[in-house]
Each structure stands twice: as structure tokens, then as C-alpha cells.
Length: 106
Image (cartoon, rainbow, N blue to C red; front, side, top):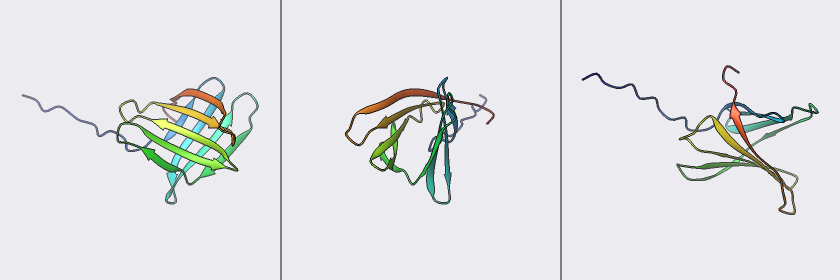
């Protein structure tokens, strides 16, 4: 019997995720989790650091707060190539809710 190669599941989402309209670079550096979001249509972007982490081992939620606006990434280790990006205004209204897919090779 030949042993099967088992790859360890990633512990956090890292890399560049995108769809037609949005791109998000996620990195862990200098002891904190970093978010760099870009609107692919306008080229405007935002950089944030210091996410709070919640959820459980099956679904992790990373949240950055920027003057009351929350930028939330939901990620499942069982599907590491996809993230859900949500932007929630200070009044609690969801401004954006998109699935982004990893761009391999970035």
C-alpha cells in the first residue's frame, strides 16, 4: 500500500483574491493581518491592518474597522481558494457582499 500525500490545510487566507470588480490582497506580516482592497474599475484602494479574528475552525471571520465601516472577510479552510468580502457601513447596512477567488501565481 502506497502512503497518500496529505497537504496541511492553510491556517489563514493569504494571497490575492478577485472578481471582475474587486481585488483583495491578504497578508500576515509584522504580527498583524493586513487587507489591501482595490476597486478594479476605478483603481481606488484601501489598506488596513490589525484584523480581529472570530468564528471557529471551520469558518474564520477577519474584520477590520475603518472609522466605523467594517471590512469583513469570511474564509473556510475547507475551501481555501474562496473568500466572502463584506463591507458594512457604520449604521449596519451591508454595502458589499461578494465572493472572490484566489489568483494563483500572484
